[in-house]
Image (cartoon, rainbow, N blue to C red; front, side, top):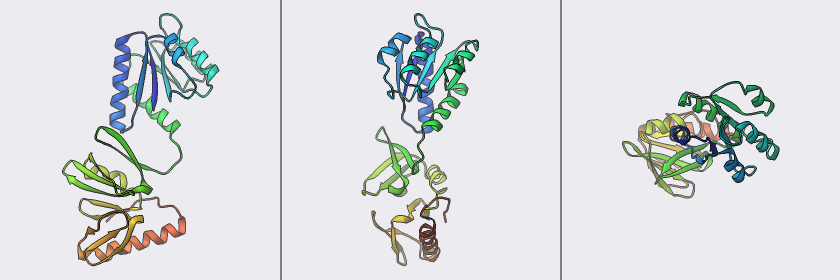
Amino acid sequence: MNIALTDDLPEERNKIQGIIMDYAAVKRVRIDVSSFASAEELLRDYRPLRYTAVFLDIFMNGMSGIDAARRIKEADRDALIVFLTTSNEHMPDAWRLHVFEYVEKPISKEKIFPALDDILDRIAPVSVPRFSFFSRGMERSVPYDDLVMVGTDTPNYLEVTDRSGETLHTRMTFAEASDILLKDKRFLLIRRGVIVNMAFIQNFDNSLCFLSAASPIPISPRSRKKLEQLWNNYLINRMQTNYPGGGSGV
């Protein structure tokens, strides 16, 4: 997500950018922020679709945020503009311009986080779910359809294996991953510390679960029958619905 942030006060820009980056860390999403000290500077840079959203102070030296928003809307009627202001007197202008959000200063996480949530909701495509995490300082996002397995590496780290056989390491607890993945019924807790995508299971023997895109996973012989039944149920449900949504685990 790319955000343009315009405020003529450096301390305000730094504060808002810090809050936005805190949000990115909490939500595990990548956000790039471009800061501008004036509306004129923003407009020289602005192109339709360049930014996911524009955070725009109303009261600035030179061109006002209202006039800048009007110029942006002329070029890009669908632009998501978030007004930042010390007063609500420009609320009517905001509605006429179809501004996305109106945030009154002083700025805080309690005000900016909900605005960012609304932006994410607006831009989120209706698509297959993805498992997002950071690995080697980069955000990674693996579609559930390509996620083969997740397993405990060390107490606070996981190994994530995708369809290509690539294994990535991420700082996340197994409990956190379980809370996310086991809400979708294609994923199965195959044994303590290991979740697999049942779409990649090929077979079971007494002590192993065989996967098409990863090494076999040792299992308890006592749990083999239950695991195999859950897998068979998943296959039947997938054939009937052609959509593996829902929640499951052992």
